[in-house]
Image 1 (cartoon, rainbow, N blue to C red):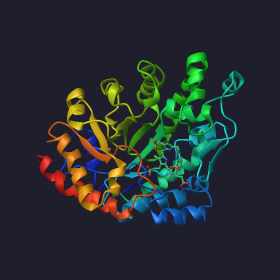
Image 2: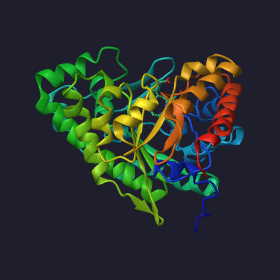
Image 3: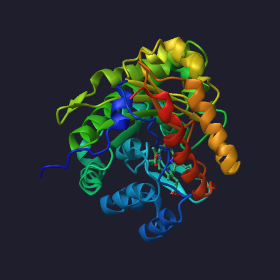
Image 4: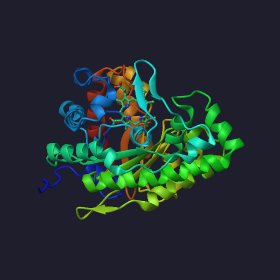
Length: 358
Ligand code: CP3
């Protein structure tokens, strides 16, 4: 079946640093618990994995934020932990506790047993991508995503979220060979996974390196960025006659921006600790930048939200040969009032027009 032509390609053009009439905007975790309609679908599905593994439900929640706000991209509803789940680690999302693995990877024998999963076991994700593309009907592009090899390894070794990363750092410092073996497998799995999403219809892909920023300088480059670079180098960069741009987001990665910008990605995501004018100078417009509003600013009320959005757009400045995709500096909080997002999107679209020559 042939797909509708894209009606709004502002997001894809901005990622490729081509002229656009306004700054495109989407939000990390835009489909999620701050939306009552998401919570309603999730309770029908019974659990987070019940939602993510059912393509019809996944498509439904992916489209929910687009029904409310004129966002410039959709992001596949799924999770970065589907890949280790497919490796047989036994993923469960516990209420109020977040993700949990029944069989974490801690000992040498656990690493010996680890393999790149058969992508057939992730068919539900690729089916969701195809279904979302059909239901989007060309409205906006669809972003596919995966976790970075390092960030996914954090969950595989810790078995759940962590505040100090003691278990994975014990492995990093004590048995770096084991961690490198895990990261090699994750890099291959992630490349296969993203390429299958692209084949199914993802029009851009993003790597979430949410925990790269917990690493020491030098070790970030060795244990996170080197494997991200391998993934990026293995990706298909064209599909349906169009470039498939790659975005790399390392939370807390501002200090390493030059290194990250050289990893082969089209765009770098930034958290709110970074000044976009300085970031732009540091990368000499060699990549587009995505970000970087503090998600907590959405709790400040309409005038404050609009003022903070303008500050981000002012910092990036006249777009010229650059490319800016407006986003938050991390995922939207589940407590965000839905009206706050309407204020934000409206301000970004209106205020940014003066920063684009066309
Ligand atoms: O952006 C989107 O709208 C797409 C969906 C998406 C989810 N997770 C859905 C989700 C994306 C892109 C992710 C990525 C993800 N998942 C990351 C990287 C981005 C980041 O936030 O740093 C990470 C680290 C995970 C792992 C994960 N998944 C955690 C730690 C949690 C629990 C945290 C929490 O907020 O409770 C999840 C669960 C999860 N993934 C939810 C959603 C909407 C909330 C769970 C629910 O509905 O019960």
